[in-house]
Image (cartoon, rainbow, N blue to C red; front, side):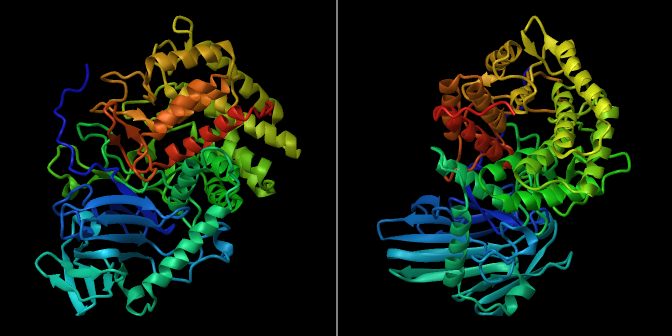
Length: 625
């Protein structure tokens, strides 16, 4: 039975009506109304200071809007940058609002050990907003209303002078400051700073918001900071080696992934947000501001393909640290904070519920799950980096063998899997597949590098997993591989089978599975994660198509030789990007963006599919290796 709970009214501005800015420490979402209404600070996994996206009445926001509410609005990125340009247009004038975070020293492509030549000067961790009048005149209203600790704490605003306001909270030590090029006022009862100003042709106004101690003594010009930041991003984009037909969307994906990475640690978070519902009824409101090990293989593959070996190296250092400090039996956590620690327990944030029964969650209970597929992602990343990057060290190989031995012992056990089921363990096709990848990549690496390993034991295990998948997860009636033995449940995670080279892309069993997924899980270009049912995952709500699965499907079609079909799915999916090329985690059949936004895995899958389509369309033959 489908979920019959009433669907709450959609907000006037959908969640994806926003662009993303950042500095590889944190990020912010800027709406088409000129409002920063989602930002965690000082780090991407810190508590929110602006969360009006979730709770408009008191979640907090920093808005710069025309006094004329009827102004037309367009939003774009400056080419090859993460500088967001929001254009307000009326009969009387045109104004451009530029939002960005200056990139600090260390926010580079070579990791923490070297500062790039094109980096901006060392600047505080802050947001800079520059409103510049390009034609005519326009009046504006500015309001900065931070709400500390997920809007749980009261905010006090103190006017330091006519161009600076500091914000404090009764809880914690974080103190924030707003500097302005024009006069400011405060609303003490609301803990807000505000101003009204008018700009004429050629005039501009600047605002800087960030940590108070760093901004008190910081003397820099907003226009200079803007020029330096543009120079940094264009220099970074110029390093890409991608020259295919999808350059614009591939580079936007790359620039987005860079924003979701940590310049200090090298990790890449799944998404910069928490609490955005995956279902139209407002349920499934998870926190994705953590790094999942399984994203490693996609990240390393994408970064290396684009020529960003420095980022790949930095991420591999982070992965190596997790492997080095894993449990004594070789097991790893499912996810980590950006600094490599365990995510906090999952808790509700009632202050941001916005009157809905489904409350946003922070932390993630999946941290305590068993997900055997993460080891395949880890080993695939290590293998790829050894193939295209640098050879593994002696100590690194010792850590790898310990983890592979753990998989050899546990591959046949049930787990929660890639979809993080919350209603029990089960034997899952994708988990078995990625256990096979774990052992396969370890064997390839051992043989290529002549590394010591219990080869016979590993070979026997790889063969046993291969046999198990073909004998127990194949449904002869459906002519398809299925999610669990003796079931008829399809699973879009099976699309990884040819992508990780477990099965040939034109193998009859695979072609049957591809057809079954197309018939059972596809709605136009949208691919749902699994055959939907009331109790399959134990959660309320009906989710949308999973965006990454659609790009996996497009790539699988192309690999199977059905290039025209794959290209059409791919290009239909491009239409589900928002106005600046960002993708949400899921898409409803009615077209709404669902889930956390933007999602790294979707952009990673897009890059991989674009490369495969380029190869097919250019008739480039890549041998089976």
